[in-house]
Image (cartoon, rainbow, N blue to C red):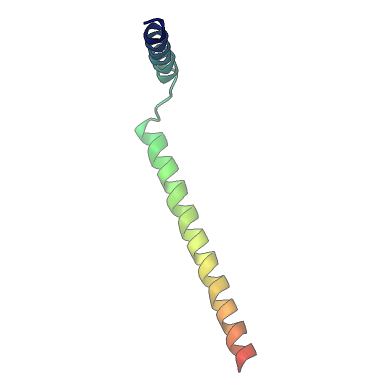
Length: 67
């Protein structure tokens, strides 16, 4: 019975601590969300372009080496 009380106390303590931490969370405004989305999309485009160029160059180098 004491073990059950201990588990319940731990569970209650966990929920209280989780609720406290959840109250500290900063949710971004719609403007912040849009800015972050634009940054992610732009960086994704830049990386795709970079990888495409690297792949094109590597393909041509391999083709030239193999004949």
